[in-house]
Image (tube, rainbow, N blue to C red):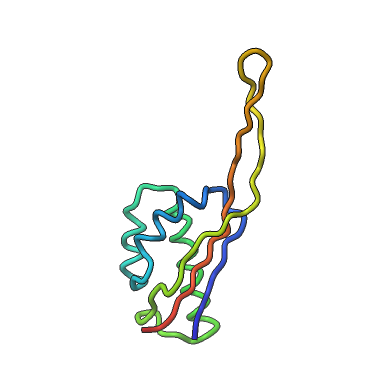
Length: 110
């Protein structure tokens, strides 16, 4: 039985959050949350909230044992990009792309 949680339209680049995801993929929940609590990146806080949500889903909906859970799959897909413009020299403008992510965590019992 799998439990999952999804966070959509999160204002962080998928590339940046994937670096943190690679560190915790396949780990037990306790280890992953411990590692994320000491990581300085913005994405670590977001992933910690998402994993806690997936644990709550597993406990509430599927009656899974929290101590036996591990991160089976965790991935970031690209969401819509917000396009902004910044004025530059000689009347030009440069595009700024503010990227968003759709984050997914799938938990399973050992």
